[in-house]
Length: 186
Image (tube, rainbow, N blue to C red):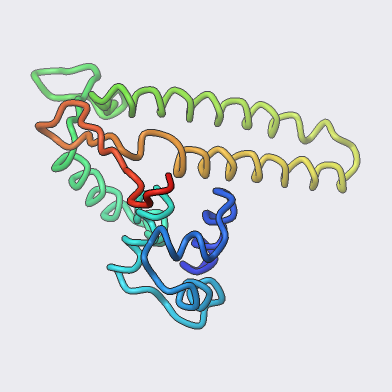
């Protein structure tokens, strides 16, 4: 999915017109239109302005390709550099055993998200496990599509609505960023 397609999806999910997004992001409406149509690609500064206008994190617009162990390790180090993480598991001679190690976040907000995410994945997995019992392939296909749609809906809900304004960087304690309208009519 292109950046322009993502802009359009999140704009529509929030019920905004291109004109409204242009006003919120302080970017010309014709430029927003060109981004959504894939005629132009926004620069990082524009992506940040659009994300702020939508009230979402700019990272949503980037396609991270995490394919190798090295990619995951780099991501884990970046997380550890940024937020408070704890490790748990069995230890022998002060060394964690690989089969028991787990990583935990100290942030209440991330813990809440992880619990909701695990619950959602468990629910969808239980439905997926029932698919072989469905005799008609066309109904199986519809069920698979519904599972995918439900998971996408869940991700979009968290990307747009949940705790995007709470800073959890190391050394902070529940700092919230408030976004105020500069429009005198609001």
